[in-house]
Amino acid sequence: MKHVLITGIGLVGLELAKLLTEKGFKVSFLSRSIRPNFKFKTYKWDIENNFIELDALRSCDYIVHLAGSNISDGRWTKKRKKELRNSRVSSTNLLFNSIKQNNITIKGYIGASAIGYYGADTKEIIYSEEMPASNDFIGSLCNEWETSHLKFNEFKIPLNIIRIGVVLSNKGGAFPKILRPIKSNIGSVIGTGKQYMPWIHVHDLCKLILALLNSKNSEIYNAVATEHITNEELTNKIYKLLNKKIFLPNIPKFILKLLFGEMSAILLEGSRISNKKTKLNLNFKFKFDSTSKALNELLNVNQKT
Image (tube, rainbow, N blue to C red; front, side, top):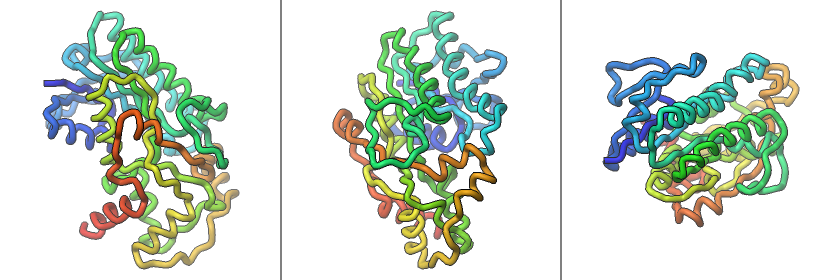
């Protein structure tokens, strides 16, 4: 039985653990605190104090490193930027150094990154994996994050990095935050509304990670659905599916900049991201490759609860 160690007990980690268990994998988690009543074995790590329970690494075959503080939780102050970096880069370095220094053997590694690698900008370019990182904060952070993942090449194991788009799920993450104001008739288009929102349904993201665990690839992949959609198109589509109409004008850029500062860029900007490599190299088929299909599934669930 293959044993997978997942970092980050969040939306994706929990959904992934459920899928892997169904497929016959053994799953455990690294967490900042032990959860005695949690249905999966948890081991403790403390990134700030450079501590990790080594049994977590000794017992696993594969690592899926998803941990990272939410990029959109609050303004990007100097302190917050440091937290975002440590939760990504320092945590990866802790994993790598612990494995190396203790001569631990693993069979494969998957590291999360984000489509923010390409920067917070709205352009006509369709970004693919070979393109360089942006030099803005989010692009630089993702580039440093990926550089830390690439250290695992030293172990001569399959190493894959996934640049994840906005994950859509009714169990948490961005979608409930998008849906809540719309259901209350106070939702509106953000800024010009022309910014793209690269996205992926949580089901497809977990299936993609499963496909990588079963492959011998060592690549970087964009984890996004095929359909490109703007903020304006998405907002209108949700309103229509809920049989509602938008009453409020677009939320002006200057208000978001006042509220969120530099972080507002990820709300106001966004470009198209290609998933051709993901589909061709892995022969991966998305179940939810259009927003219509994804939204119908998500809204049906929401309407039943």
